[in-house]
Image 1: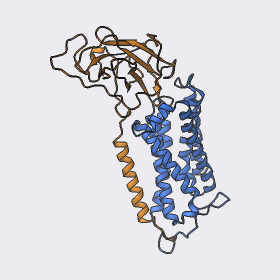
Image 2 (image 1 turned 135 degrees about the vertical axis):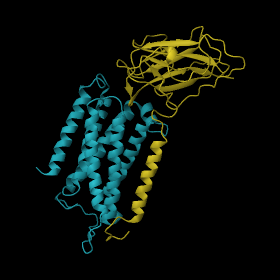
Image 3 (image 1 turned 60 degrees about the horizontal axis):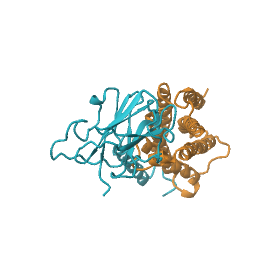
Image 4 (image 1 turned 90 degrees about the vertical axis):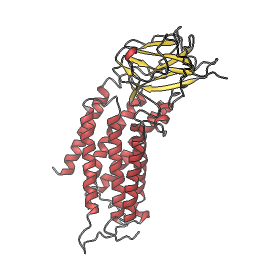
Length: 192
Length: 208
């Protein structure tokens, strides 16, 4: 480029404007909480909790021919995952993390291990975890201290990670710090 | 007191308030040392970015030194998070990361480019107007995206930290826009900016 130009070179101006447009598009197309993450928090009872339930209400028999879309591991779902979490350890009080585990025919799955981990005021994601088993209605429940922001936003991880008849799946979703409830349902597919 | 000194005092006060709020808040209570270091580095970087555009006209030497400090602070912020929590840090820097992380990633990349432009100014042999426009507009993006990232982050700077961040971001953005407008307004005929080959006077006081 000539060294005596008194205005910026038009190519430079165009390149900068193009860059600004690309950045705007990249931000516009990003997910606020990360790809595949949704806000699963609530301050109400599980019956009014937000988030799409993948099947019928717990305890209700699925409609004939009903199918539930399998849960897919979302980006970040494995973050800070550690196998062999301590069994049924209370993580505090003030927040209940719960959900129903089903198969793709929407039938509740009892006795399935579910690991939950999250950052609270008393522990980071790496040390604050437990594994619980689903009850006869396929529901699991973990009591915890409220979630605190981890990398800019409170989030909770829920996974079925044990070897067995169901394929492992890892979920990362977000909630608000004041939420008292987080609902993460899982739909599992057989390993074979 | 000159306007630049006023801006400097505001930035120093802003940095002190941000660091004080972060260290006194509940979010960092009991947090790992690296998280505290990363947060403090980010607070200082935001304040330094706010003052940077105002140093380009008559205090280029200071501008260069503060630019180096910003680059080091941002690197410290990122590396501390990477060491402390590589899973979440790498996820945040991935294409699947949340919007606030994407803003930070883009701002960090642009900061590297802005710094490189500063270091390579002589070799590039661009006209002063072109160099200033590219360097300044990318730096303005760094300010906007960096402060936007800080505003979207929940945690250490919630509450009173938000207006302080907005004020510092506004200070930096206004300074950058003022400089860009001056660059884009061509001087009258016969008053063309002479080619300076990108030389930065060693005295630190020059017309920008």
